[in-house]
Image (tube, rainbow, N blue to C red; front, side, top):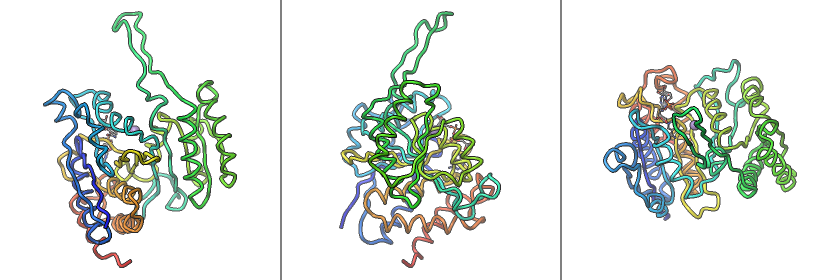
Length: 358
Ligand code: NAD
Ligand code: MN
C-alpha cells in the first residue's frame, strides 16, 4: 500500500487554521479510501520563524522539502514584515528551486455558491488558468539605484526564455486536450510588450501544431478581463504569464464566488521534485484567529494533491464531499454570506466523506 509523505506548512495568519483543517480532512480521505496512507510532517516556517531567525526558512529549506511527495502550503504575509520579504523568502523560494513551473488554478462555481455575475452558474463558468510560475515578470532580476534622490531608478526585469515559454505552453495545450471542450486561450500583451510577448505568440503557434485537436485563440490581457466578465462561457483553459495570470486568477476567484474557495497547485510536471498545493488567498489578517476562515479552497487543493499523487478516486470523493457541503447555505462561512465556522465546515466535509457510498 502506498504511503505518501506530506510536508504541511501553515505559514502565517489564517494559513495554519486552514492547513489544520486540510490535514484533518485528508486523514479522513485516506481512512475512507483504505488504499493508501498519508504521513504528515509539520513545518513552522513563516513570519514567526523570521522574527526568531531573521529568515523565513532555513537556507537549505527547499532542499529539505525534496524528501516529500507533496507540500501543502497555507499562506504567507504579516502586517509587520514587508510583503516582498515574506513572499520571496518562502513561497517563491520554494517554487523556483523545486521547478514548480506550472501554476494551475481551476475555477468553477460550486453548488450552492452564487457568482456575482448575473445568470452565471456551474456549467457556464468552468475554467483552468495555467500560470507560468518560474520566470517572466517575477524573475527577481532588477535593481534600484540612487534611493530617494531625484535621479532614482528602479527596474524589475521580465525574463522570458524560449524553453520556459515552450514548456508552459505544452503543459497548457496538454491540459486543454484532456478537458472535454479542448479549448485554450493564450493571453499576452503582445501589442505593447513587443519582444517577449511576441515570442509567446510565436511559440503558442508552434506548439499548437503539435495539438491539432485543440482549438485555441489569442487574447490581449486587458480585453481578457472583459471577456471573463461578459462572455465567461466562451473560455475553458487559459494560459498566461506569471503576472498576467496572477491578476486574472484573482478576478476568476471573485467571479466564482469567493477567494475563500479558490485553490491552486504549483506543479513540477517532470516530477523530479515535489509539487506544492495551496489556497490562492493570503493570510487574511482581518479574520485571523476568529475561526471563520473558509477552508474550502484548502480542501479543493487537497483534492488536487490527491489527484497528483495518483489517487484519483480519493480526489473525486473529496471534491464530491466538498460540493455536498457548499450546496448547503447553512454551511457557508461569512465570506460567502453565511455564519458557519471553519470547524463546522470541516466537520461537515469529514462526515460527508465518511458517508460517501462509492
Ligand atoms: P488575503 O487573501 O489575505 O485577503 C483578502 C480578503 O479576502 C480579506 O478580506 C480576507 O479576509 C478574505 N479572505 C481571504 N481568504 C479567506 C478565507 N479563506 N476565508 C474567508 N475570507 C478570506 O489578501 P490580502 O489582504 O491582500 O493580503 C494579506 C496578506 O497575505 C499580505 O501580507 C499578502 O502579501 C499575503 N498574501 C499571500 C499570498 C500567499 O501566500 N500565496 C497570497 C495573497 C496575499
Ligand atoms: Mn496573487
